[in-house]
Length: 58
Image (tube, rainbow, N blue to C red; front, side, top):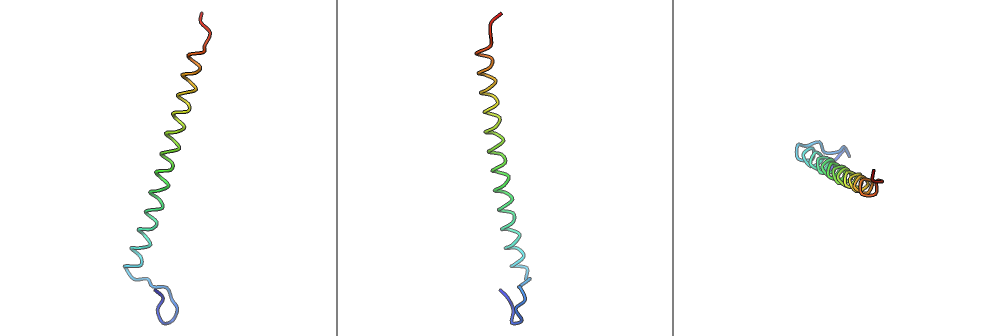
């Protein structure tokens, strides 16, 4: 909350709230990255399985 001069509040509580909000955003980004990575690995695996199944026999 700003003080009477209009300056932002730099109390420990405000800093902790800001840090927690940033940590939550960063954690969400990590989960999205992990989800896309695992999804991509599955796509690659399915393409490889398809290629092996449809490979010409010698």
